Length: 112
Image (tube, rainbow, N blue to C red; front, top):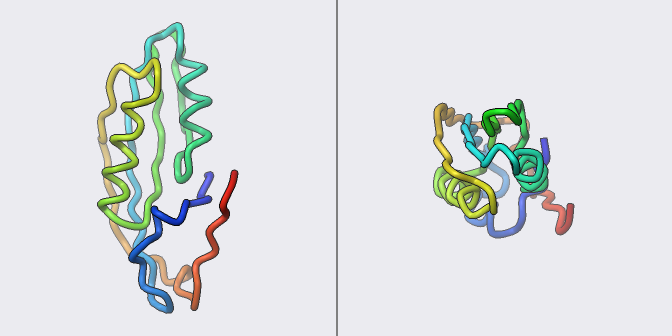
């Protein structure tokens, strides 16, 4: 999974405390003729993993990981702006804290 979160995505996360983890299962429907192009664009986004795709129907299942619910919602909305996307539906959501991420700082790559 590409977890290279940009600075704006991790803003507000407390340093030295457990980091919240938001996981979403999202169904993206693309125009079938643009399914591969859309899947590549999705995979390039931070926190997004393309789990399954069906080029014949244009359906793509992605898993999104985000540090806050607000970032999760913003990320899901951003998927709708990808050219060739017809619809985006969040079908699963998990919220929890990951104690393994609780350190004095969060390393955030600036490029991917």
